[in-house]
Length: 124
Image 1 (tube, rainbow, N blue to C red):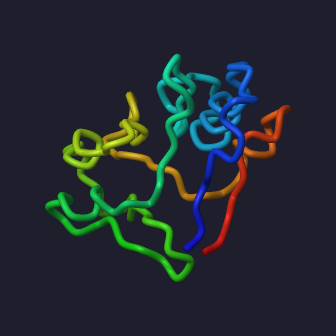
Image 2: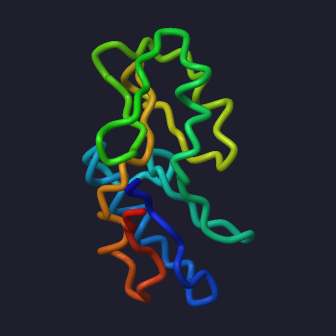
Image 3: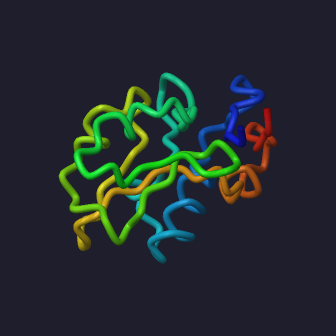
């Protein structure tokens, strides 16, 4: 399984570079509401690939790929947001201008943007 992990949470300086990089990469704008990673006072919230989103999707458009990452078929997603509502980490997002949900795909863009090396992509 490939996933994003918070390897050194105490070193996070809450700069938000990870959030900015994520939103810019997938939505072409810096908007923290579009980021699939969140820096909060309680720490960094990131997808742990638990699969809760796939379990509640009424169209079964969320599946696990060969790397163990849950992905959304954006051609099938109707934007009901059942997955967004159920996410235990609160890191699934719904686009404000498109009727689809988004989630972390363990791409590593956020980890590369982190100046403190707090994030990393690992394969189990």
